[in-house]
Image (cartoon, rainbow, N blue to C red; front, side, top):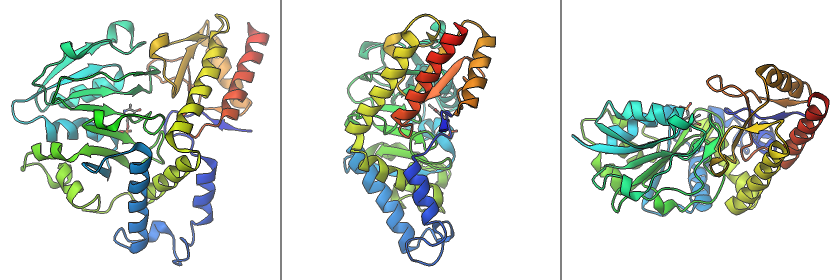
Length: 359
Ligand SMILES: *Cc1c(COP(=O)(O)O)cnc(C)c1O
C-alpha cells in the first residue's frame, strides 16, 4: 500500500478522488463535466454555495463573516491583507514563527510599518515564539500569526490574544479544518487549499465583513476584498474545478464526523508518530515539545546519510514524500486530514524496522 506524505499539494481522501473520477465526464446528469460548466451555471452555483455552506457548518462561521474562494495562493494574501487592512500610515503586529511568517512580514513592509512582536528565529524556529497581549500594540491594525509552520513543524496549541479591538489574523494554510477553533477569535483566516482543503488553485479567505470597510477605494478591483464579498467570489471566473473539489473534501470531513472527530484522529496520528520518535534517541524530533505540529512531523537521524537512506528505503516501502523541506533538511511526515491512521501505522512500523536494522 502506498501512502503519500507530501507537504503540499498533499494527499486527498481516496473517497473524494473516486467521486471526482465517477462524475468527471457527466456531472450529476447534466451531460458534461463540471470542468466545462459556466461559473454562472446553476450546477456550479450549487457547488460553490454547497462548499460555503459546509465550511460554515464545519467551522461554525458566523453570519458576519464572508467566505471567499480566491486565486493567487496564500502567498497573495501576504500582500492582500496589508493592502486592504493596514490603512495609510498604519502599523501591524506580526509574530515570526518561520519562513512563511518571514514572507508575510516582507510583503506587509511594502504597505506600512511592521512591528515584529516576537520571533523564534534565534531558536531556529524550533518553537512557537512566546508573547502575550502586553507585547502587542493596542493601536495595531491587526496581529498576524502563522498557525501551523509547515516547514519547521511547529504549531500554536493556543492562540495569542491581541489587545481589545485588534483583530487576529492567521495564515492557516496547513492546519485549516484539522481541529476545532473559536472562529470569533479571528478577524481573518486564509489558507491555500492544497494541504487540507483540496487541490491547488484556490485560496480560502474567511473575513469579518466590517474589516473590509477599511479597504482603500483606489485598490485594483481584483485585490479589494469588497469586490469578492459583494460578488460572492464570482466577480470573474473563480477556480471552478478546485472549488468543486473543496466541496467534496468538506462533505468528506462532515461524513467523518466533523471537526471534533477529525481532531481526535489527528491527535491519535500525531501521538503515535511522536511516540515512535521519542522511543529512544535514534530519531530526534526537530521541534520543541510544546510547539510540535500535529500536521507536519519533522525529525532527524544521526547523520544526513542515514536520513537519505531512510527516505529512499521508505519510498521503496510505499511511504512517499518524506523528505524535509530543502531549507531545513531532515525528514518530514505531513499527516494532514486525508492521511489515514493506517498510513501512520505503516510509517511507524517502517521506522521500527529501520531502527532495528540500522540502529
Ligand atoms: C504552503 C504554504 C503557503 C504557500 O501557499 P501558496 O498557496 O503556495 O501561496 C503559505 N503559508 C503556509 C503556512 C503554507 O503552508
